[in-house]
Amino acid sequence: MSITTKKTLDQEQALITALESMVSEGQNPATLEIDLLPTVEVLTLINQQDHLVASAVEKAIPQIALAVDYITAAFKKGGRLIYIGAGTSGRLGILDAVECPPTFSVTDDMVIGLIAGGDRAIYKAVEGAEDNEILAIDDLKKIKFSKKDVLVGIAASGRTPYVISAIDYANSLAAITVSVTCNPGAPILDNAQVGICAEVGPEALTGSTRMKSGTAQKLILNMLTTASMIRRGKSYKNLMIDVHASNEKLYARASRIVMQATGCQHHIARDALEQSGYNAKLAILMILTNVDIKEAKQLIANNDGFLRAAVDQHQKQQ
Image (tube, rainbow, N blue to C red; front, side, top):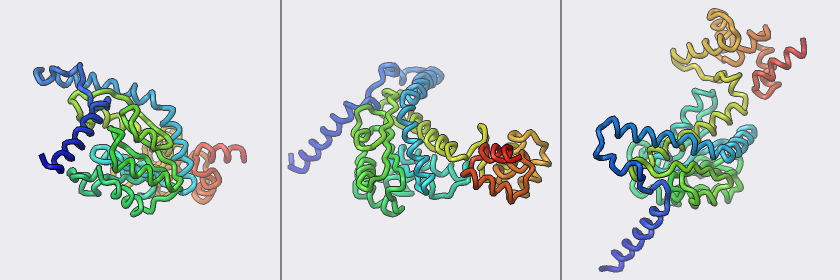
């Protein structure tokens, strides 16, 4: 055996040992016979395992809340939320990031998703990318990551070198760092200032962390952005009042949101939307307070974008 071969074997054995210690890589006793079952029973077993995800995420709510408060504070000061991950974790970060502009009318760079290997890794695995520590730092430098931003490192295993390197770099800049994993005791939990762990247990198909682990990560990322946007005035009651209308469905949704918020008829909602440039928040305020577009804009500005506060201020002035 050559020295090179022995070194490779030793490295692989070390990784095998690490994998054996991870909850997400364990063999699930509930699904040991899954390959022998008819389709309905296979699906039933998978569904039963999926039922465990929400409760695992629930246990992490205190840490998720802390992360939301940091993200909200960063947004208020002009900072950004940056997701970074490899493979499924990276793709989930990108998915959550790209949904923010149309949902909340924010700029494309307010929430950014980075994946090991770049854009091509969204569609196809890039060999060795998740192990490249220098690449993570380069990717953050390319977007001019600074201490004003919040970095959320996503890794089901909690040991991905690309993600850990990114967190360490962000820490060196005194930025807020958050980690999202599904393995208790994972290195990534110690590296980040806020460690979020949803212990969903072993997958129905051993090691396929795109399943329960991926679902848990998706839930957590949705919570981070949705709650942070709510805390920045992007909702009224439970309505998406900052939705960006860019297609027929969203134009109709904007009208419906205005109607739900005010109880007005369709033609009134449509008229207010047209006056406001299809800004649902302004349209709602105009209808609720009977002010013109100029005064509506001033009321929103005076109240840091919060519609309820703007309505309350107008009522107190009457």
